[in-house]
Structure formats: C-alpha cells, structure tokens
Image 1 (tube, rainbow, N blue to C red):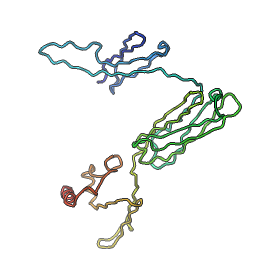
Image 2: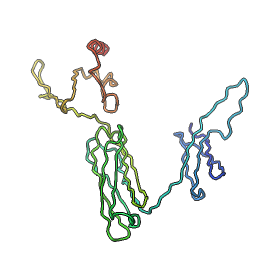
Image 3: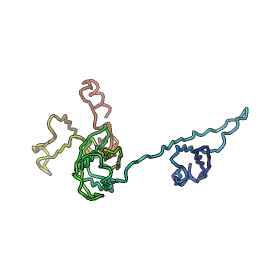
Image 4: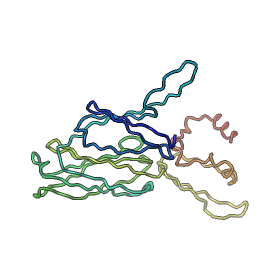
Length: 266
C-alpha cells in the first residue's frame, strides 16, 4: 500500500501520542523518535492503518487491517566502554578468507574489581545456528583508557550463507556489558564443490574422450549429458546454488522405479 497514510501510536507514563506518516512507493514509512522525555520508562508502539476500528454495519462488508505492536525496554549500562564491528560492504564470495575488524575503547574503571585483562567473546550465527565461537584476550595498560583494534579471521562457507551475523561482547567484573553485532551478505554456494571437464576441448565424431570429475571425498556425484538446447528451453530444470533444496537431494530414498519415472518425465 504505497502513498497511504499510516498512524503510529506512542504510549509511555500514561501519555499517548499519535503520529501520521505517508508510505513511500514501496509501502514503507520511516520515522525517528526523540527518547529524551521517556525517562527510562517502558514504551509501547502501535502501528495502525486506521485510528479507530470501523463500526460494523449490518448488511455490509467491512475491511479490517491487522495492527502491529512493538515494546521497547530501557537500556541499562554501568560502563562507558565501547566496541564496534566494522561492517564489510557488498557480498562476500563463498570460500574467501575475511578478516573482520573490531574497534574498542576500554575504561580502566570497568576492571577495578578484577584482573587487568579484557576477554572479547564472539560467535557467528549461520543458517544452521551457531557455526563458530571464540575468544580473544588483551592486557590493559596503566592508562585510564585503552583503545585498540583486533581482527577475527573467518572463512565463509555454505554453512554461513546467505546472511550470517557476528556478535562480539565483553562482560566486565563490575557487571557492565558491551556488545555489537553485524550482518554479512555471503554468496550462495554448495557444501562440496565439484569440477568437471573433458580431456579435449574439441573432438571428431566417433573419437574417444575422457570425462574428468573431481569432488570432495565421499561425495555422491551424478552426471547427465543432454543437448545444450534442452537447457536453453527449460532453464528452470538446471540445479543452482540459489535453490536451497538443491543442496539436500537424497537419492538414497528414490527407488529404481521412481528414478525411471523421473527420467521419462524429463
């Protein structure tokens, strides 16, 4: 619903405010809120298409819109320390080594009740959950504030794609916590890469050529030979790494009869 008025209802400390926005061409409405007057109270947000629900009239059909709700809790922090993950622009190729940069600023006061070292913990969330976790430790000097940078080496594989997130955090002995998270865009790829090629680029009809197939150990491979025009006429039949199910084909569960039926259908 583009170029349409929508309403935002903001409620806190028994106060209620209504704001009106106009959606853009994509149907989205962006807004910013000033939090100075919230005074650490919980805030509720409600998005509506209509400020008042329509009154039902017998014999007519009313249109109802679903409202959206979001609740904001105040952030409590006992520290002035800070860390930031430097975002990686663009899409990272699958299999590429990447060094994720983390900048930090640590106040010595946050370590006054514990050892003079800082433990940075991190983990990476992929499509199958947490795929990587680790920790880096730095000693704190005698200055009241320590700033620095470190790098987390990552190799993005199919377990990460297409949109992994890295989280870095520190828990201080005083109870304070600093943290940051950053999403990545990783190109789609298969878990096992396969290479295939002929021994000759060109050959005469009736001559012998060999097909060379290379894959990871214990990989199950299948070879299909068709005329190129078939793929041009039916490109949707071609497997692609952008199709999630293409990575999880289970040929063990197909009987010979079903395989024959599939070949006939093709």
